[in-house]
Image (cartoon, rainbow, N blue to C red; front, side, top):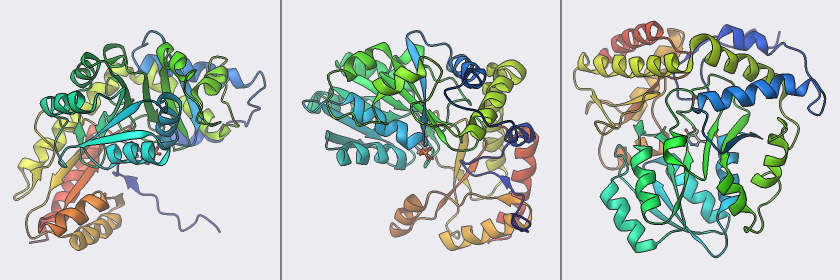
Length: 379
Ligand SMILES: Cc1ncc(COP(=O)(O)O)c(C=O)c1O
């Protein structure tokens, strides 16, 4: 039968992620009409709980976009960067680069400021770029999933605002696992998605849009249709989506966000992510030759990146992946493009451990113990 050979693996990659049993079961709840009175039973609760997880930012409305995080990032670029304006895309890795690529592909006047893999945004260098380029808008990544770096969003936004620009933040892999700091940062828009720290399957992008963003979008031409935050807002404010949503995911999201807010608690969830970061950091001390890759002080609470010893290679990490599969786990052998570049420089690769969403500290400890055994067989 179809599905009989689908492996039941514990996912320790950085999204999609392991789903709680209750979330899987919620996929069996009844389908519904998205313009029917059944719709607000799901989306009313979803919108309220999204705001609670975001820290109830004043003046922001969550919008659910069909698609994934990328769709929301594209909507922010299409809706908020006018033809006469310049956008500075600040990148600390692959997803910061993606934001720039999207701005360029959408014909925006875009410049990029790049930091080396593993580094966080350096405020002095950011200031130099702000003075040089005088951008109207700045995009950056809260939690860079390719390198395991978490940026100091408050300090970065302060700097951006001090130079008269507006911020757009990609919070895809951290929202639901740590404070989004929207109230403190006041970005025009904060973008995220379902399949990372919120613990859901992929399928929706989520954008918190400010009143300022909605007013600004009025003066931007060619916002597109699904990428138009004004059209999206028109439906979001009545707890609907602009286009037909995935009803299965909506049911799962309704159940999961209620669990996060009313059972686990938002604070408890954030603390658990911090605890898992500590577990990952302590583990590396037991691993001879392995080191944390991300800059100290800027290490993500939702994933950790590890620099391997000189004898490791991309090929060997692929073997590790298959050995871990044999133990019932899906191992993440690192972001492909970064490891390719490291190899070209004669450097050993990095790998990632996703510890986001509903991975529990004990599950992580067990995983790292097994992984340690597998890695130590490679000398
Ligand atoms: C930081 C970050 N931004 C953007 C994306 C793209 O999001 P999606 O895959 O949901 O389109 C990802 C996906 O891994 C991500 O980690």
